[in-house]
Length: 106
Image 1 (tube, one colour):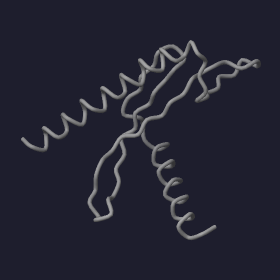
Image 2 (spheres, rainbow, N blue to C red):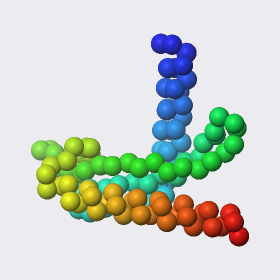
Image 3 (tube, one colour):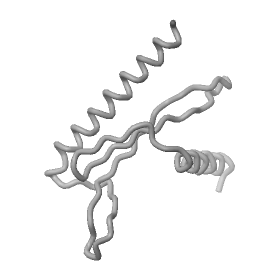
């Protein structure tokens, strides 16, 4: 594997490990659909720290054995619920970012 690909893979693993150590900032659910908002910190190319949000998406279902599973695949009836949950997550992220910017100005 080329060095750049290795570094990118290592950063991805580090981000995933960090996310598993912290709780999500917020979760939005509509039935079996869930959108999870994660608040992350990163370093820009010029070395400055910054925060950004990422979003996880899943549909929960019960398999034949009764075990709960998650998937990113949706059925047609899941689409309206997914739209509602994604809109709520987007609204939360935008309003939270605006509030954080206002706090920095004050």
